[in-house]
Length: 524
Image (cartoon, rainbow, N blue to C red):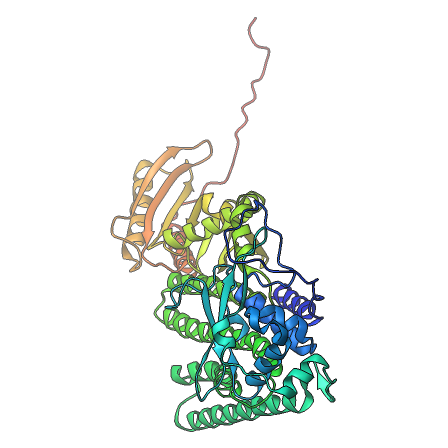
């Protein structure tokens, strides 16, 4: 999580640092098929609709209408007023026109497909809210160079530069109180609208939560979901409302487009924040239900699914932020296909652990809370993670086993035993007669049969003539699943056997050895 945030901050700083310098001028050739095997890049960066709009706005911000005219498909008869047309377009956008936000502009050299327009046309906005005249980009091809996008002649026909605009385009007068290419008052107007909208949604969400606290319990699932969803949802709705009404504000198109572009990052963050909190709330509610129903394996699956979903959401958020900052995400994603093999080889162990996690959760040999033996480790399972499983040993230490190794080990689950084995070898003295030995066997059988927690198939038999005792083996099952309870029942059985044999004067054998010595010399 920390490295994702750190990377996002670094990339944001790089993006806000400034636009690249304007490239040198170049002359477009008439439309035709490109003949060069390696077309030269366009000096104005007009290869895609997104880059063309970005370059045009940059020229507007710098009041460089000669450069802005390079983004217009000016007819030959209007070449002398190309700069004035660029200024007229800027004034139309400032006084009621609008452009699509940065993220909605196509970054494909072929433009947007499936929009109902001709393949060489792309709509990027409207000239006026009253007339709704579209602003169209048209793709032109230059010989020996990549295709470029320019404002179409059809759109330029709707513009009529005034004499004042022609004079201002020829001799731009530096504007006062300008910040990043737009008047300071315009920035303050947009920021004020955003703050009003956000405060309004925050007040409404706080009021809803206050009412819920008075009508519902804090443990209510409805309260949990709304408490998790409302704060980020208020932030996201603020962005949506500002997106709808902010672009209609009568302010500079530079301020509107720049603020909408970087507020797109805020929208992505708010949406992902909302989804992350929603996933946590739903997962916590489901986990508590599974634990109350003693379905611990299902709870482990929910925890695993929550982590996977959160990783996917963070990855999508990072892609959205990088795309908004202007990075070529399509190329980066395509590069993953080439580097996928290298990544898979480098992360082979991690992939093995992930597959092991899926195997453990699918086969369900253990659950969180089970007492088990994995290899030489005995303890209680505390967590089944994406990469490893943690076991609390009887020494109260925590052993972490990678799931790739965990799934390949021999796993012995003690918690799934339905009964416990009572198998004890009792050594009796050799001084016992056959009748007394038979009596001792009957006493042991009687003790096992009388206990209510011992299964009916219990037995006690003479196992062997051991070197130092008569070995009597008991074989029975204690009908309890809990290990601790079985230990105390085992103790009761041993104490009762000892008491009964002691009352019958049956002695227990001790490890002894008899040594015989011969007197005199042995025969030759």
